[in-house]
Image 1 (cartoon, rainbow over the protein chains, first blue to last red):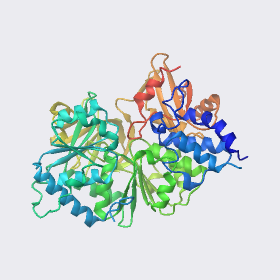
Image 2: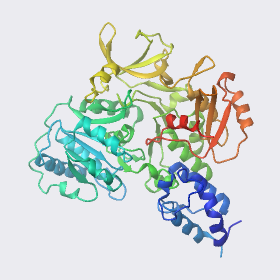
Image 3: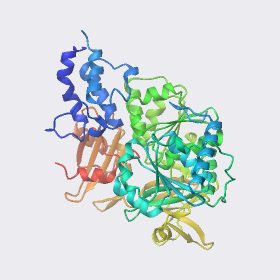
Length: 86
Length: 477
C-alpha cells in the first residue's frame, strides 16, 4: 500500500538508521551528512533499498537508483517523497 | 574505445596523452627506476600517470583512496617517490608529502600534459625492470610492496587471456580499486585485445549496479564474492535484462557454489570463472566454466607454463592429493618485496634438486592427479576447534546454501571455545533452523554453536571479508 509523503517522513529514519553502522543509537542523524561516512557501503545501500521498498510499498524506479539518491539522508527522503501518493 | 564513462578515451588518444605526460615527467627530472605514488579513486588521471611512469622506465604505486596518513607515511618511507598524485578525497594527505612533487588529479593535472611530446626517447629499460609495486599486508603487519616486472605483466596477462578469452568487443566494468591488482590488471587484459574498460568506484557497486551494467552494455564483470552477492540480491529482487553480460571472474575469496548456481540461474549463458591468486605472482589458477560442474570445489589448474604443487612443513614435495602448503613456479613470480630482503627470502625460495625458484603461498591446499588445485584455507586462518583443523570456508559455504543468506563468516571464540557464525541477511531466519540446516550438511564438530545475524559483514577496502574485524565482533554483546 503506497504511503503519503507525511507517512514516509514519519517512517523514514527508523528504516534508515539500522543500515548506518557508524551512527550511534543516541546520535542525532544529520540529514546533510554523506551516508557513506555514516557507514552505508554499497552492500548496505542495497539492503536499505530493499527495506525502503518493503516499508514504503512502492518500488523505486531504476532511473532513481543513483549514487546521488543515496548520497545523503535528505536526498533519499526527497526522492521518496516524490514517489508518494498525494 | 579504451575507457568508457564520463570521459571516454580511445586507445590512440590515451597513448598520445601518456607520451605527453611522460615528456613532463622527464622534464621534472624523473627517469628509469623512479617511483610515483598515486592515492586516488579509480580515475583516468591515475591510469594516465601510471602508464606514463612505466613509459619512462619508472614504477608506479597505487594506494587505496582509504589510505590513512600513517599508512602513506610507511609507504613513502619505504619507496621514497619523486612524485605523488592525490585527488579530492585524499587531499588531506597533502601535508605528508614534503620530499616529493605533489599533483592533484582535479587541480593541476592538466599541466602535466605537455604540449610537445617529440622529445620522449624509447623505453629506457629491459623487460626485467620493475613496472610497478603493489602494496599488500606483509607477514609482520607492515605493508610490503610486491615488485612486478614488465616481463611478469606480459607473461601473466597472456596466460590469463588464454583461459578467459576476452575479445575486442568486450566491455569490462571495474568496480575493484586499482590499488588491488585484480582491478589494475583489467587494464592490461583489455589492452591485449583492444577491449573497453569502465572505471567505477567500489561504492558504485550499490543500488545502481544493474543500471551501470545495462547502460554501458557491460560484457565482463571481474569481482569478489561480495560484489556477486550484491548482484544476486538485486537481480533476485528486480530482474534487469543484461544480455551482454557473458563473463564473470571471481577472486579474492571463495565464491560459494550456491552463489555460482544462483548466477547461472539469474543470467543464463553467463560464464563464471573461479580463480585463485596472490599478489606475489598475480594469478595462480583459473577454473573454466566447463570444468566447474565436475569439480565445483576446485580453483582450477595452474596457468599454462606454470607449476603448482604442495610441500609439507619441512619443505618436502608431497604427492598429488596430499594437503600441504601450495607452492608456485613460473615466469609470473614477482621479483620480491621492495626493500625487504628478509621477507622476500621467506616467500621466494629455491628448493628441490634443480634449485628452482618457487613462491610459498602460505595457503593450504591440495593438487589432484590432473592438476586441479583445491584450496583448503590460508595457512594462518585455519580454525582449530575441538581437536579438529578446519577451514572456515567449508562452513561459510554451507551457510550460503540457506535461502536468504548471501554471505557468511565464521570465527572461533577462544574465550568460550565455540564457533560463531555471522550471517548477512535482510530476511528473518530462526537460529535453530540455521543450526538444523547446517547439521544436515556438516560434520557435527563444524556446526557453529552461536548464530548472529548482521545487516552487513565487515569488509576490507577490497570488499573481501575482513576476518580481523569479524573477530572483533565477538567482543560485542
